[in-house]
Length: 107
Image (cartoon, rainbow, N blue to C red; front, side):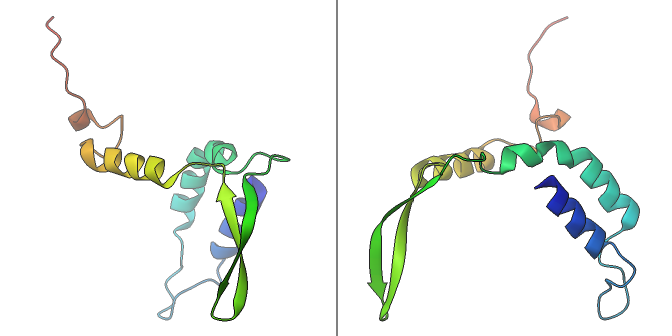
């Protein structure tokens, strides 16, 4: 996965990738620094190799088309909703944001 992300960054960071007014799509120095900082996380955002996370549970017919139904082992909707709630409940933009820390230590 890391290789594919790097290939995508390289493709989009090239001189030929510009918008309609000829502005580059990516700032070269910025995207290279972001990738340098974030590539260590690529292993934690992909499915483990050789471990099926989707199980076919049946089919559903919709509009004359037969669709497969799957169960995902990754998590439940209620769990994902709970994490969304936590994001909105906890103040600050990151754990290292000094404004998000509330301490009452006395020195």
